[in-house]
Length: 145
Image (cartoon, rainbow, N blue to C red):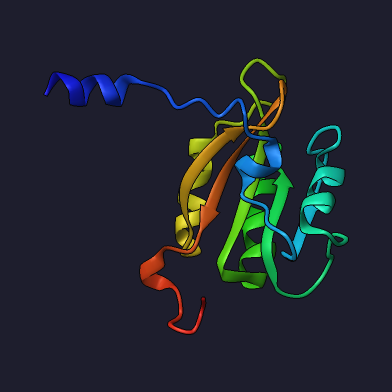
C-alpha cells in the first residue's frame, strides 16, 4: 500500500516534451488555432503537422484561447460540430494571477452538455495553460479510427 501511495504522490516529469508534444499534435492533422495562444505555438504546430492551419471543414484538433465563460461557450458551439470523433479541443486560458484568469473547471459543464469530457491539462507557457476536451470513447462512432 505504501508503494502505491508513493507512486501516486510522484509527479510525472514532462519537461523533456515540447508544448506541441504535450498537446498531442501529430503530422498531417487538420488543426485550427484561434486567439493569442502564445509566442511561437502557431509556428510549432504548423511544423509538427507539416502543413498550414485550417479555417473550415472537419478538424482533428482545435486550440483556442478563451478569456471568459461566454467565449468558452461560443468556442464549444463553434468547434464541436467540426470535431472528428477522435479529435481534441484544447481550451487555452490565462494562468492564476493574470487579470483575465479563468478557472478551467468552470468550463467542464459546458463541454459535457455537448458530449465532450475533459481528460488532460498542461502548461502552455508562463502565462497560459490548457484543458483538453474529447469525445468519450463510448460515444464515438464505430467507423472512427
